[in-house]
Image 1 (tube, rainbow, N blue to C red):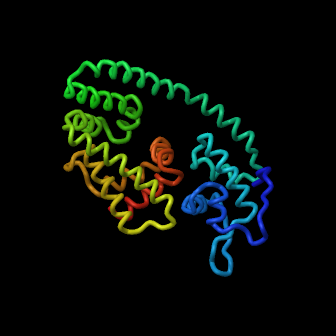
Image 2 (cartoon, rainbow, N blue to C red):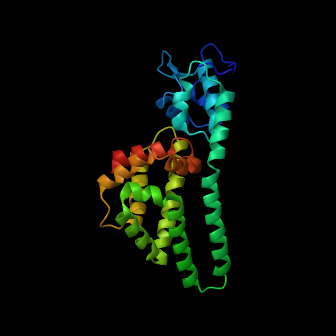
Length: 263
């Protein structure tokens, strides 16, 4: 790969912690990039990773392309090119972003609908406002993800999920919202640590299982279906973006790995 960058490293190279501090990422993120084949550190006599000039240059490219939203899944193929033209990649990515404007416009239309409904909420009773919130959430899901979800899981499953969401009590809804925030907080914390303890992994997997049950219902939940869902996250860039943008690069992969290992 020819990056066009000049790296200034000492002959022994950087340790993971040194490079992480310099690049403003976590050591776990460096390890995740290595797992994807994006970085190739060598091992010294003490079996410590050492990152050389090529790794520093590659990391600069990775961070540049990630900063404008290029999916990690596309980076591996790009980084394997013998003469990577970063400017060309950025230009092509810009075209792709323009092509996504229709999808963004869909989100804008949904937001406009929610704004109008929110204006009405101020004059509603608490119970009426809560029911409107639930219905708006179901409508947003259908607008943004319904077509793909129905194709993957079938109309019956999605209809049942929507019905369950619409019939949730305030306590059930608040629990679901709390779990969603707690899962992201835990993922963020784990990405910043160099190692994931068994206790932390079990806590995250259990929270995610409770969150899935809140959507599916206890009768529809099974460990096998949960693991299959987590694996499916990695095949859908929207889910990868959902977790990685909120928690950091590698969050979705870490979540899927833990669910598969623990559940």
